[in-house]
Image 1: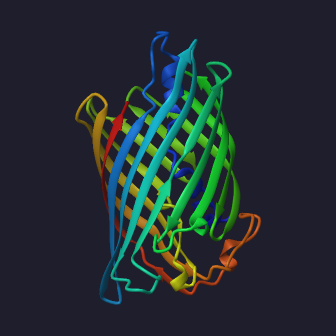
Image 2: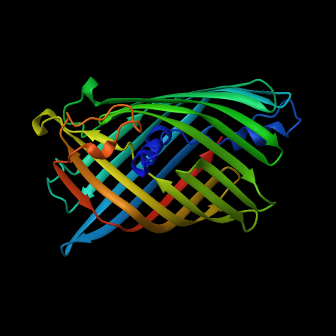
Image 3: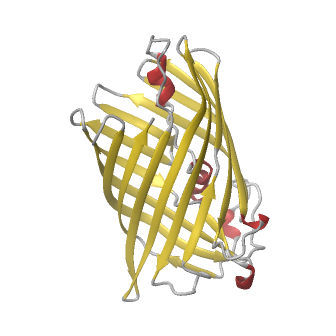
Length: 311
């Protein structure tokens, strides 16, 4: 599987951040009135500055997401739920002018996620993620992207669970069908590893009851691709980032936490493509065959901050 195709897997998963750990933690709780906190509100900001030919540029992003459980049933170690959400991502390019057809782009998703547990060990997770992704200058059905995935979650022990499945995404550049592998491992009392291998991983160490430090590796930014208006030829912008970061998380209250992080984008790439530049069924066909109208490649640092609330 080519590295470029692996990057795009995150496009399928970025709008849905529910951890397999929720089922794992729920399964060891014997209280039949227990309701795991799977609802969430998250907001964050990222800033990635760089310099090209002595000109300062940056990629900035504001994110916010709300996931609300419509059904949340826990019984005999089994968790069933239906969850609906909404997420917003605002992307701003600074210093690039009109090279990429504009400077402000937006993605709005409405993920619907369902889990059915067959036992305390096995569960099926299915998610559908329609997304409007464009510069919002002339909104239409052409701005819509559709993604989804299905995963079998397996809790092999009290401290280890994993999931296997497949993800599908119809993007402006074509369609993607890729395997999905998830992991949630409580390595020790204070150390844990979670993520979607090999595209997004997070290693955490619990310093005390309120503080956590860790390392994360992540592909992708925002919805991945954005449609431009008809005045700009209905072309599309594609943004790729691969970053490694160190983070610090502090729990201000029982269900409320803040996080700061900093790291480096080993891949940072902006591409503007003609609307007809498509490659269907990646990774079976090579996405690198597309020829961009404009391209910018530049690595650089990134800093981020965020808040999170669970309910």
